[in-house]
Length: 103
Length: 386
Image (cartoon, rainbow over all chains, first blue to last red; front, side, top):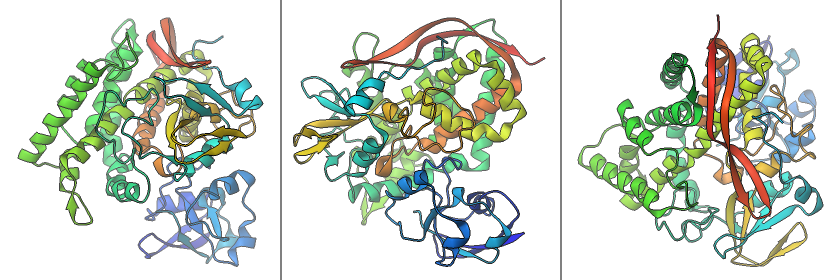
């Protein structure tokens, strides 16, 4: 079980708990404002864009080339940007706080 | 060749040059074909603008049949963003549970109705009614209004004889004028009224601006949705194993929707007007000329998609541009996705087999390229699951 805090588009913290699936799926389950996941998680829309904490980058690993190519076009891209549909939930992520970037 | 197959006419031009050329009413278009170039040009609104003369970014150009600016489609940032953000929440309503339920009921009723018939034409008797009925949900207006739109037939702008038909377009424009006047007289909780009550920087939207949004909503989601529904039925007719798979593995349905949108690419391309002398794919492009972003060609780019000409229902990474890309990506996409999602799930649950009895392909001609985009007619038989 991992507990993730999403800071939503209105800057409200949403505490979500899950065991498996992607971070995006967890955010959708908890109706996190600013995570829309229009394409359902196939790396086409970038409406699940989040900013990770600096220490989170090594935990989740690098973005794939396809993900990077899409992130490149996002206005709110930072060095901590990822698409939450491409991050698998695991116990290693327990306690992490991520920020919604889209919208 | 299977009847549902949509070949890729851009293959050679995309790999050899990265672009194609076509004339359109003496306002030629350089068609950008590669996935990377299409996304880059779509993103670069300063050089490739949408806010040109109304109708000019559409191919074929509608400059001679339309003065109303379609909003937010024919605007550039920052004005574009202000209008778009007014509408985002409304156009995401299709993701809500009650909207989904209503849409599911509509599509299930339609499937039940055609199951009673021996055979029927998918385009006029299934896809058009589903598209029209679903639009009543998007506009939040009474269901019976769909009858009017169904009576217009499948071609609102495009008649059988000519690609651009001003008389046909006027039917839609006059209708929208009337509806706006009605909403002014009697505001309700429909899209017209929501727009009429909206403000940007303290200024109410004008009637002309509301008309611009409504034309876009009607026109953008008509042929595209009808072709997507028809192509989906044709695909399932040709691939009964996929029908079975969607029944056994309903969790792949959303991935299947994305893959079908990639493969069908219901909107072949969309234009932009070039604001400065520039170059794409080492090809010089002059200021005040036009390019188009060819979504259909980008969606078959082998540098991005493995086996681009195959439908892989559960394609995991699928950065398609079937709904466009960047600022102007399709506002109606959540609605379109929900229609296809529900359609796939109902057809998989209800049918054993779809048989194509007769068909007539719909072929678009873009300069050197002939592209099948769907069907003018698709006669089928549905066999209910026993």
